[in-house]
Amino acid sequence: MRSEDRRTSDRVPGGPGARGTRGEDRAQGPGRATSLRLLLLALLLLALPAYADESSDDDPADEAIATATPSPPPAPDAGGAESAGAGVWGPITVAGTTVLPGERVRSGIAASQSFAGIDVETPFVVSRGAMPGPTLCLTAGVHGDELSGVEVVRRVVVQSEPSELAGTLIAVPIANPHGFRRSSRYLPDRRDLNRYFPGRGTGSAASRIAYALFEGIVARCDALVDFHTGSFHRTNAPHLRADLDRPAVARLARQFGAAIVLHNTGQPGTLRRAATDRGIPCVTYEAGEPMRLNESDVVAGVNGALRLMRRLKMRPKDPGEDDLEQEIYLNTRWVRVDAGGILRSRVELGQRVVAGEVLGSVVDPGSNRHSKVRSPFDGRVVGMAIDQVVIPGFAAYHVGVRGSALGPDMPEVGAPGLDPDRDDRPE
Ligand SMILES: [Zn+2]
Image 1 (cartoon, rainbow, N blue to C red):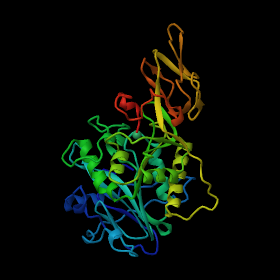
Image 2: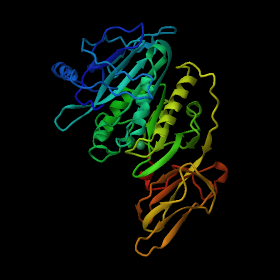
Image 3: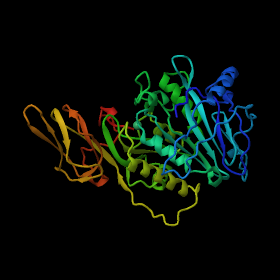
Image 4: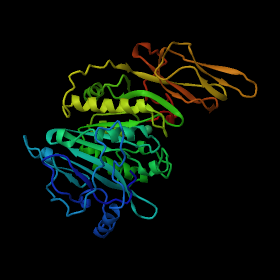
């Protein structure tokens, strides 16, 4: 799925309305390539593996998305089908790639370049349903070391046949290919891409990549789910983060249906915050830890995304589907350790805890002294550190606190001064 050198669309006919393959119109997107490059790299493309070149027992559709041959760019008026008028369902153009109803196209947006000056493309897949409907976007890999969401998005794409789809699914499985290639959360300049949305075309590397993604793809979405995991040897119970004060976002969270929902606006610069501020309802799905694939986290994410698509009427309704009860936490707090040593946890992810309960202890390997870490309040463990070496002040347990449990000393999440150690918030 590394695709820095691709310049053409990979296209698979998804239904009776599908037609022959074409290249993409770079001149319409934020990234531009010369026609010579296009030709040379199109030839190279033929030697590269396709987007989904592995099969899995879990995938009902395990065929690769076919590689297309380049052809002339689409007409300038080929896109914007949604605005073509009521009852009209035509092609959509995303970052210069035009996709017809019933088609699934894999393409890339040249959001950055390598040191050699070769475009580093952020891959995306557009599945244009045969029937009208909303445009749902799924993004993952904004942090390059977070793998679960990449796999969630891949599975949702292959399970969404354009011929059976109403609306459009736009998937960005690896939003930060620089970080993905190096198994790093960050960009090469140590910046966190998820602090730079919506970005600027003339800003830092992070800002430019964010800008290309946001204006080229995210701005086309009617709703967005951004997939993440915990960060830095921490792991999360599957949960959503959403600004529940916004009705459209609250509805999106309910339609996704994950069991735990944390309410907060999201930090400035996050994709979620920027999209929501632009009027595009967005939730973040958090599950698991970086650098690892946990099957149950992936399955929960896939199920949530498919449930959301059914409730948006993009897929047929599942008659056996129940409303999942959601547990909403209006506030969360990090519990920090006060001693250095080796952290040994007693609690598990998702466990409910009461005030005073021992969450774990820090063991000094020299003196064998044990320092207990207790929860200051009733709540539920929504994230926690994996057992590891810690020093005083290390944020070990992320505890969701229900609104009714809030005391006067419990400021809103995101309030200034609550937690200056912002990197502890993995989103
Ligand atoms: Zn993340």
